[in-house]
Length: 123
Image 1 (cartoon, rainbow, N blue to C red):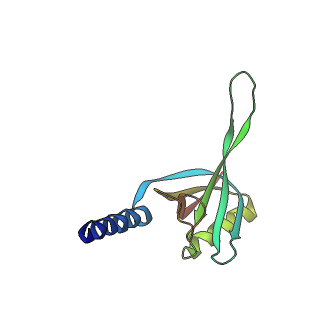
Image 2 (image 1 turned 135 degrees about the vertical axis):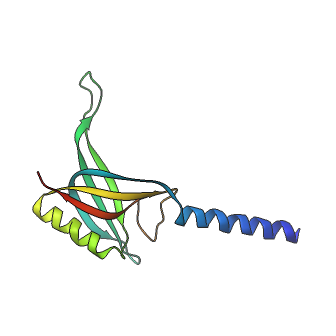
Image 3 (image 1 turned 180 degrees about the vertical axis):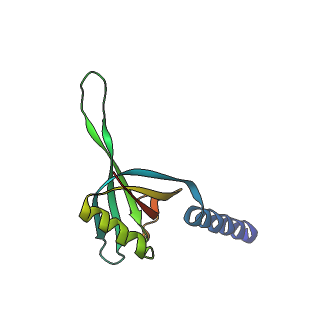
């Protein structure tokens, strides 16, 4: 019984380690940043919204919604946060490079998408 509990504990630690440190995907998205905020009561996280442009909906003229992508930025990414705030202030188009985690990590951010670098796009 003791071996089974130890094995289950090791499996749990392995799964949690993979969920926190492994990436599901990496990529980038471009658009105009709509919002950047710092949220949280105890643990503050940086959350943002990127308007990727265009609308989604059906061809018959049903509900049309804008394509908003929610993302998070780790507190340790100071330069990235500064560049995002600059882009928001100037209304510039950006390319956000991100890592997608398997699950949201509450003490890092509200989403599974963590932006780690920003490129300002000249019109």
